[in-house]
Length: 99
View 1 (cartoon, rainbow, N blue to C red):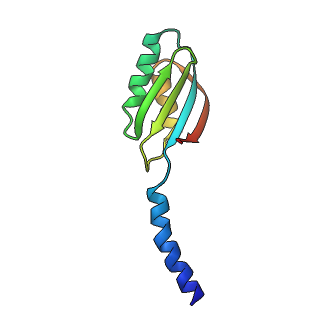
View 2 (cartoon, rainbow, N blue to C red):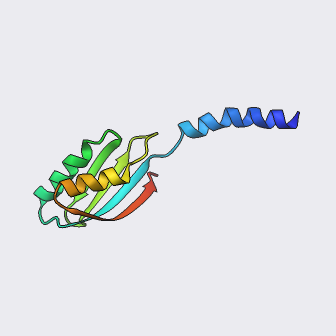
View 3 (cartoon, rainbow, N blue to C red):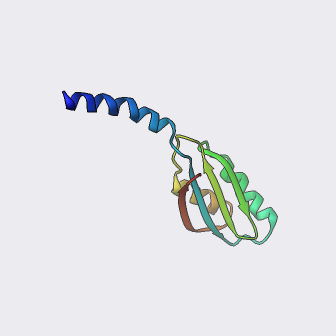
């Protein structure tokens, strides 16, 4: 009986916790950008990905800050490939949660 009650509680709580999941963030250091036009080009390419809700590329810090759509997970290799396709080199990648 206790096992059945525990199973029912898990089945009720799990969907709620998945629904309330936090958004993933990705920060990528980028080498080679030298002007605002460079940063804009990278930002535009990263923004085309369907799981990216918001992309910001900062020329001063030489970093991309990405917010992933709720319920989605970033494809890090695809993000790096977009940066390379823009003519720059992706360096350190940091994955976190939006708070």
